[in-house]
Length: 108
View 1: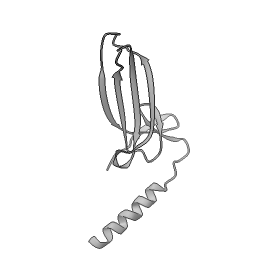
View 2: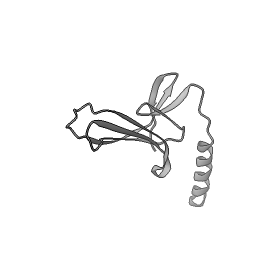
View 3: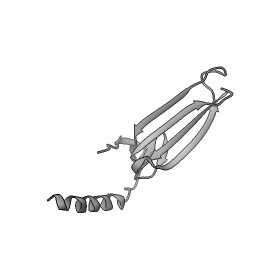
View 4: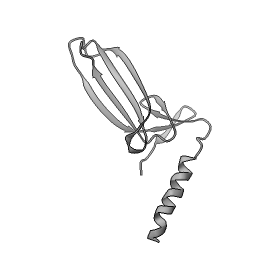
């Protein structure tokens, strides 16, 4: 049975990688739309050197933590012009169907 394990794994990975996304289903990370093969989400926020702006980088991560999709936004520093801030947040990707969050995707 052990000799069949790699073969079964290859078939399972092929089937899941070729799976189509059902109509009305999207995958989201911190509000950003991600590809269906997204496994995790990462958000990095930090104030720029002059402390007047907050930069937010959101990444949809796939296998081996490869970046599948990313976005960068800038906004005024909500903590005040003389405050510095830095945060890294990791989360599961959310599955959204017809504008309703169904469940976070489980990584197994």
